[in-house]
Image 1 (cartoon, rainbow, N blue to C red):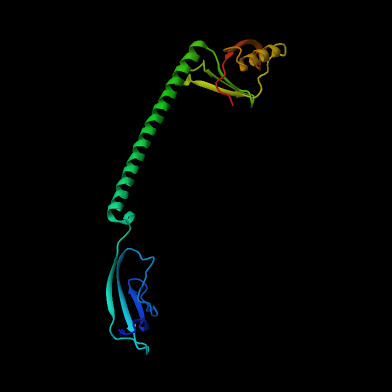
Image 2: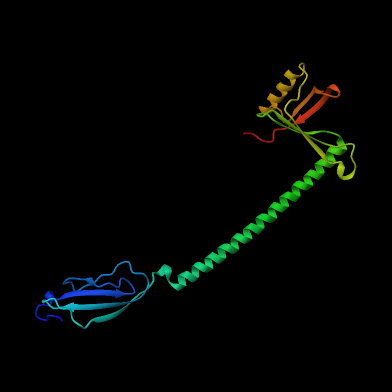
Length: 212
């Protein structure tokens, strides 16, 4: 029911099958704008009414096809899947290489520990590590009374390591000289107290391995 003489008086309504299936009043506007439609196929039904208000029993049906955006089309989705697969493969290769590096590092540490153990056992000396902040002294030696696997390293941690009062100024001076970079190595011969023996002379050598 379209008034060819006065088309502006024609009233319209529509509904979108596949979207909002309710009849929507479009007043006397002959243009319909849809926003926010997802990709897919829709069927639009359109009816017109006379100025008297009666809706026509006939309707116009149009099929609308909304194409997906470029980034959601099947070539793009396939590209995303390929990229994701390549990323996963790259991650697996990276993790495998990292695992191999870690294993090589662990093996190197194990070999260094074995060489240190042999060196300590052959020399009978102590390997020590002193933290200036916590004043914690960690020493490592090889058990001399064991055999085979029992002759392994023994690590001890001391919070108190008394130095003979007469030797403290010399030890401190040489330590400060090394900390300031005036000497390539800390070397000191001084007396320390052992519970079972008493005061004994030792020769200590050390080097800074880490600074804050």
